Length: 188
Image (cartoon, rainbow, N blue to C red; front, side, top):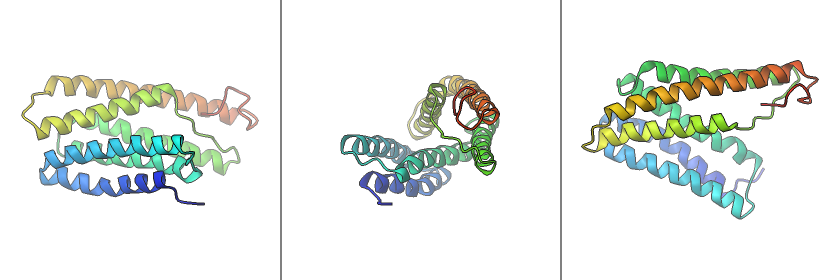
């Protein structure tokens, strides 16, 4: 399985995660903010390169969402520990991801592998999570007062996380009740 340039960019993004968390904990929110922006730009660049130059790969289809999840979950756990976001938001996000991973693994072990395809609600959820993380980092890094916006975004992220979890759960139950072809309503 060849490692492509987009895959190398994604791996680089994974290496930014511990550095970003360390910067947040250390109190260097300005640098953490710009590293977070760099991670977002690298995500766009690797996707663009993969599409435009036909550099898509099976490895990249796993690495890219993994890098996004590792970055977001790590930042949210750090924010919760530092009391920068409500703990319940982080619990919802981490629980959702664990449930999805567990469901995919269970389906595979039971001989009904699930092909994961992002749903619109899931994309909206990820976008809201990115916006909230950026708002918190920006609020910590610069002389802004975004408390009300952060609170509204936290509620939106919570709502979208619950909705996304429900959609994937319904899809998973339908898939597991089908003959393995997705005939009972499609694969998640």
